[in-house]
Length: 212
Image (tube, rainbow, N blue to C red; front, side, top):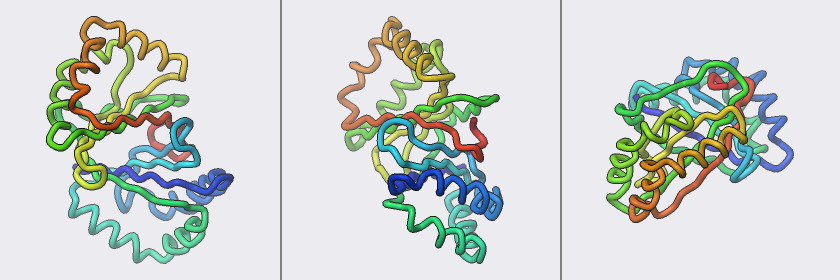
């Protein structure tokens, strides 16, 4: 299985219009016939005015085939023509889910998600990931991971990991607890030589997101 993370940066003031068009036109036209929507969010921190969506496909070849079919859909073409003027830029990453960590969707609504993307020095992201997985049980005493991925295309030498929280207060408490943990607290410094850049974004689920 392959995941695709797509990040659309929208013009200021256009996010409500984009979500309206997406919910009323985009989602009904596309559904899960051309790849399965895993989650969709808007950004609360980091770069604002962004729409972040995560898709899953059986393989890279399946993604290419389904996106080719989608491009031929007349209704989809009309939808794209409607939303394209709202966009500033589009970015995507093709991701491989770490099988040891797996994917862990949560039930219920009202959650916040944190997407953390780490760019490693060439050849070092695997070292970071192995060390991360060794201490992950200690980190998950404080909050739960949704998934860990490494990049295949876009943002090379990078890893993405997503966490779920009830709210920002719970996130603050979880991170404080983790940093005070005798095992996890030592971890960030132990792998700092592996990483060149770290990004964190708080995400709010859209109404059409399967992950709420």
